[in-house]
Length: 117
Image (tube, rainbow, N blue to C red; front, side, top):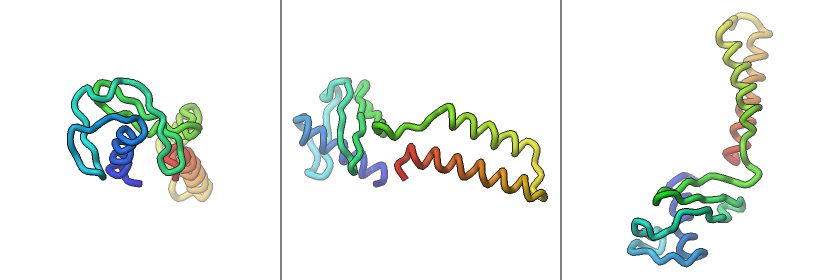
Protein backbone atom coordinates (compact mmCIF):
# COMPACT_ATOMS: atom_id res chain seq x y z
CA UNK A 1 0.00 0.00 0.00
CA UNK A 2 1.42 3.37 -0.96
CA UNK A 3 1.37 6.30 1.48
CA UNK A 4 -1.53 8.12 -0.24
CA UNK A 5 -3.74 5.02 -0.02
CA UNK A 6 -2.60 4.53 3.56
CA UNK A 7 -3.59 8.08 4.60
CA UNK A 8 -6.97 7.69 2.84
CA UNK A 9 -7.56 4.48 4.81
CA UNK A 10 -6.65 6.23 8.08
CA UNK A 11 -9.11 9.03 7.28
CA UNK A 12 -11.84 6.52 6.39
CA UNK A 13 -11.29 4.76 9.71
CA UNK A 14 -11.49 8.06 11.60
CA UNK A 15 -14.92 8.44 10.04
CA UNK A 16 -16.17 4.85 10.04
CA UNK A 17 -14.58 3.41 13.19
CA UNK A 18 -14.26 6.43 15.46
CA UNK A 19 -17.33 8.33 14.24
CA UNK A 20 -15.69 11.66 13.37
CA UNK A 21 -17.82 13.48 10.80
CA UNK A 22 -15.86 15.01 7.91
CA UNK A 23 -16.52 18.61 6.93
CA UNK A 24 -16.36 17.63 3.26
CA UNK A 25 -14.77 15.10 0.95
CA UNK A 26 -15.80 11.98 -0.88
CA UNK A 27 -16.70 8.49 0.32
CA UNK A 28 -13.16 7.53 -0.67
CA UNK A 29 -11.41 10.40 1.14
CA UNK A 30 -13.09 12.32 3.95
CA UNK A 31 -11.69 15.75 4.89
CA UNK A 32 -11.69 16.83 8.53
CA UNK A 33 -11.56 20.35 9.91
CA UNK A 34 -8.75 21.80 11.99
CA UNK A 35 -8.96 20.54 15.57
CA UNK A 36 -11.80 18.18 14.72
CA UNK A 37 -9.87 15.04 15.70
CA UNK A 38 -8.51 15.37 19.24
CA UNK A 39 -4.88 14.62 19.98
CA UNK A 40 -4.40 11.02 21.00
CA UNK A 41 -3.70 7.50 19.86
CA UNK A 42 -6.15 5.67 17.63
CA UNK A 43 -5.41 1.97 17.04
CA UNK A 44 -6.43 0.88 13.54
CA UNK A 45 -6.08 -2.36 11.64
CA UNK A 46 -4.63 -1.65 8.21
CA UNK A 47 -3.80 -4.51 5.87
CA UNK A 48 -4.06 -6.96 8.76
CA UNK A 49 -1.62 -5.07 11.00
CA UNK A 50 -2.46 -2.96 14.03
CA UNK A 51 -1.15 0.59 13.65
CA UNK A 52 -1.20 2.93 16.63
CA UNK A 53 -2.06 6.08 14.66
CA UNK A 54 -1.30 9.20 16.68
CA UNK A 55 -2.74 12.66 16.14
CA UNK A 56 -0.79 15.62 17.50
CA UNK A 57 -1.94 19.17 16.68
CA UNK A 58 -3.85 18.05 13.56
CA UNK A 59 -0.89 16.02 12.27
CA UNK A 60 -1.19 12.28 11.71
CA UNK A 61 1.78 10.26 12.97
CA UNK A 62 1.31 6.86 11.42
CA UNK A 63 3.16 3.63 10.81
CA UNK A 64 3.51 2.76 14.50
CA UNK A 65 2.83 -0.92 13.96
CA UNK A 66 2.66 -3.19 16.98
CA UNK A 67 5.46 -5.74 17.18
CA UNK A 68 6.84 -4.49 13.89
CA UNK A 69 9.31 -2.01 15.31
CA UNK A 70 12.92 -1.96 14.41
CA UNK A 71 15.52 -2.76 17.04
CA UNK A 72 17.50 0.48 17.03
CA UNK A 73 20.47 -1.09 18.82
CA UNK A 74 20.78 -3.77 16.13
CA UNK A 75 20.34 -1.17 13.41
CA UNK A 76 23.06 1.01 14.91
CA UNK A 77 25.42 -1.94 15.30
CA UNK A 78 24.95 -3.09 11.69
CA UNK A 79 25.28 0.47 10.40
CA UNK A 80 28.54 0.96 12.30
CA UNK A 81 29.91 -2.28 10.86
CA UNK A 82 28.98 -1.13 7.35
CA UNK A 83 30.56 2.28 7.94
CA UNK A 84 33.79 0.62 9.12
CA UNK A 85 33.89 -1.45 5.94
CA UNK A 86 33.29 1.59 3.77
CA UNK A 87 36.02 3.60 5.52
CA UNK A 88 38.56 0.89 4.75
CA UNK A 89 37.56 0.02 1.19
CA UNK A 90 39.18 -2.99 -0.38
CA UNK A 91 36.76 -3.94 -3.16
CA UNK A 92 39.35 -6.19 -4.80
CA UNK A 93 39.34 -8.60 -1.85
CA UNK A 94 36.83 -11.43 -1.85
CA UNK A 95 36.44 -11.37 1.93
CA UNK A 96 35.77 -7.62 1.93
CA UNK A 97 33.00 -8.12 -0.65
CA UNK A 98 31.55 -11.01 1.38
CA UNK A 99 31.46 -8.88 4.54
CA UNK A 100 29.89 -6.01 2.60
CA UNK A 101 27.19 -8.32 1.24
CA UNK A 102 26.53 -9.66 4.75
CA UNK A 103 26.20 -6.16 6.24
CA UNK A 104 23.85 -5.04 3.46
CA UNK A 105 21.74 -8.18 3.82
CA UNK A 106 21.44 -7.69 7.59
CA UNK A 107 20.45 -4.03 7.15
CA UNK A 108 17.90 -4.99 4.52
CA UNK A 109 16.36 -7.60 6.85
CA UNK A 110 16.15 -5.12 9.74
CA UNK A 111 14.55 -2.37 7.70
CA UNK A 112 12.23 -4.69 5.77
CA UNK A 113 10.93 -6.06 9.06
CA UNK A 114 10.03 -2.55 10.21
CA UNK A 115 8.40 -1.67 6.89
CA UNK A 116 6.45 -4.92 6.73
CA UNK A 117 8.04 -6.06 3.48
